[in-house]
Length: 132
Image (cartoon, rainbow, N blue to C red; front, side, top):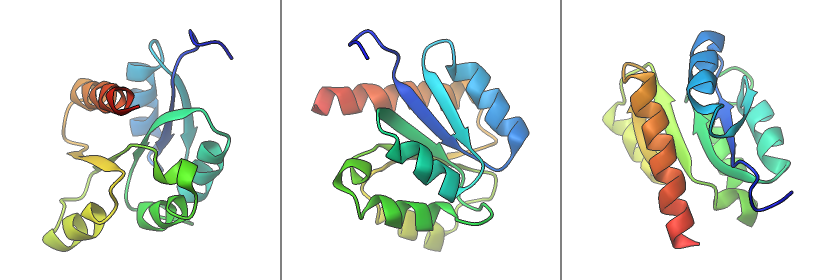
């Protein structure tokens, strides 16, 4: 893989329509891989070469919280920047719980435009590259 290779984004989302819209907004610039639950997202991230993860919170089989706890068991995964995007309103409890994971760089709503979410993905990748 050359340095000119496109950065890889993993989208972990059980809503196939939302995943397809976000993929369409990012795939010209990035390699995009999508999983439909935390288990699939974890497997995709373990393949390596991931620049950022965009995840829903509530998903079947493994939710985002469980996936993030698994990330923290691996130094490579713990370092991945994560954007949480959800349709449910963040409660104070969920915000507090999510904020305990230092890799979570943004918490966004699915009511935000796809363009805004894609822009935040680009910003997070830029911030991570600046820290490298």
